[in-house]
Length: 410
Image (cartoon, rainbow, N blue to C red):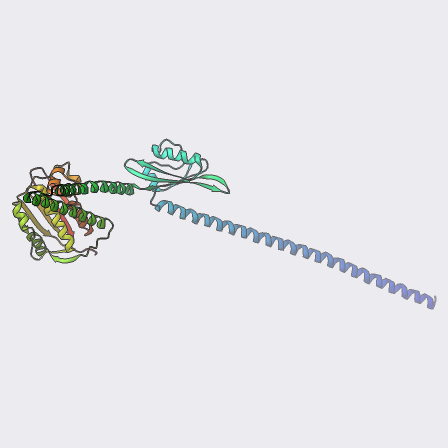
C-alpha cells in the first residue's frame, strides 16, 4: 500500500497535534500539582504562623499574668510591711463592712482578733464601735477625738472609692495623749503663773498706793514699807527668772555644756556662798566628798540644782542638819542630799517636782518660795541625762538622790 503526500502531511499534523496535546496536558497537570502543592505549603505555613503567633500570644499572656501576679505579690508584701511597722493603729474595711486588714498596733489596742469581723461588732470598745458605724454609713472623710481608758486618740476615717464606687473605708488612730497632756500642763502653767505673779504685783501696788496717799508718813514706817516693796520686787524677779529658765529648758533652748569639774571644789564653793543664810536658819552643813571625784556637768546648771535644793531645805524643811555625801562608780556619780527636817507627807511626794506645787501654800508664800525650784532642779538633771529621786517620812527628814553619768554626750 502506498501513501500519498497529502496523507503524510495529515499524519504529521495529527502527530504534532497529539504531541502538543500531550505537552499541554502534561503542563496542565504539573501546574495543577504545583498549585495544589503551593496551596498546601501556603496553608501549612499559614497554619504554622498562626500557631506560632497564638503560642507567642499565650506565652506573652502568661508572662504578663506572671508579672501581674508578681507585682500584686510585691504590693501585698509592701502593704503587709507597711501595716506591720506603721506605728499608729490602722484598720481597713471592705464595701460590705468586713475587716480586710488590721495592723498589730490596732489588734493590741482593742485586744481582739479582728480578722473577718464586721464594722458593727460589739466586741470593739464602745468609742471605736460608734466611730466605725458612723464612718461606714457616712461614706465621707471624718476626724474624731476619742478616749480609750486614759489614752486620747485622733481618729481619721477615709472612704475608699474605685471608679466612683464605694469600696470600704480606712481608719487610722493617732495617739495624741502627750499633746493633750502638754496642752493641759501649759494651761495649768499659765494659770499658776498668773496666780503667782498676781501676789507680789498686788503687794507692790498696795504698798505703792499707801506711800503715795500718805505723803507725811513717818520715816520708820516709810522705810519699812519700802523694804517690803523691795522684797516683793525681788520675789517677782525670782518668779519671772524661774519661768524664763523653765521655758528655755522645755524648748531645748538652754545650752548645756558638760565639762569635768572637781566635785569637792564645786560643792564647797556653793556652800560657802550660803554661810550667812545658814547662820540665820541655824543650819549646819556637812560635806563628804573625795578630793579626786570628777563631775561631768555644766557648772552654772549644777549651781542652780544645788541652790534650789538648799533653798528648799531652808524654806520648807526647818532642818538643823544638812548632809551632802558624794560617791562614785565606774559609770556614775551619786550625790545624797539629806536633812533632818519636817519631812514630806507621802501624799505630796508624787507631786513635789510639779511646777508651782507646794506642800504648804501658806508657808511657801510667806517665805517667798515660788514652787518652781525643784522642777528646775529636775529639768537640769534630766538635761544631763541624770536622775533624781526623793525619799521622805514626816518628822524623819528628806533624802534627795542625784545621779550623774560620768561620760555622756554633750
